Image: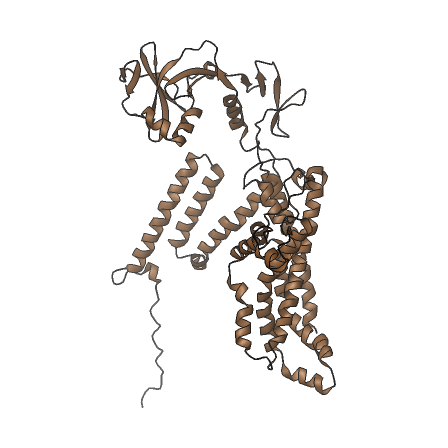
Length: 534
């Protein structure tokens, strides 16, 4: 009798990841090894850079990330992390770190006059107040360079001395002296005077270069004005690290280090022009309201920001919806051609369109005044209200094609049965639109309207390219303009474009904008859920 036992199929051999497989020529493992070598090479280079910059926080973060990367990709554990680790690192570096650093800056006085640490501020004050010592001899001087670092070589009583910013002057018997000047120094390259006179960038470096006379800072430093002779300069400010005071030896004024403001303050309230950054709590958040220089202009900017964002969304949605309804009618001939023409503004880059409109609205040579207003001198971008109207009009021209496309798609997706049923019930065109078409349309377009509001709330491009935030508020010293919105005001306050910078206040305003947009978006999204119950 034949056996009825069923043979169990053999279990498939265990599979091995391509990255760990050594079968064949082992390309999977070699490829992973090569990639990790590149990652480690860049990581070690970044770590060494952090050490040189004494950025200890960044150093710790780099070491941790490199160790984690090596552990994840050279172990069989944590397989999901092998796929998501690059994304997590980018999220950590470009999102979380940026947000955390912005929040930190918002609580500091970081800005013009407070860009340095206290140690760096002390050095800057001492350098800025250096003056030539009365009766100081003049030394024949030669500019030298080694490994990209400039230095001085002088002749002092027939002896050659060489020094750099970091290395005080020291005697160099091996240097060559001819005609009373140093002509060669082993290990250094002598820079000809003609090169200094013809290279403005090099000339600027030489003028600010200072080489300490000795290890004792009180003996001053060598400086030069013409690149051929040098003299001893000493600071008129004396730093007492133990007492934390800076004393002006000329006037006798004593400045005390005030850690609450990051400044050196005298008894009469005067301060030195260089300070350091310190944590000041919520002062930047309250300053936007309590400081009269900022409160009124920022209130106008905030009101205009809401008005600009709301009016832009409403006007562009209305125009886009009307055009979509018109060109969704089968009785219109050439609808494809018309639709193509109407979405053309959407195809142009926004900043190019803004610059184009800026030229057309120019009161002197713009075609708007010449063609449509008989050459009248209408200051479209020079009058506060006309400038705001121009911004809204140009942004409408840029935005309505988007809503035209969205509404066209939404209208074509509506159920014809519902509309036909309403016709049978005797509903007219107005009633159909008000009770059926528009509510159904809002279900799909309301989330996009919220996103459009958030986008226009921070629509920096159209403002900056068209008006530059102007015309300026003549009664304000902040430099803000009548068409500035919050994001352009933040850009102006941050000082990125030049002038006085206030990174702390700009960061605080950025956080407030984030809270405003996030809160409004959250509330609006909750309200849109009611439309789905329709």
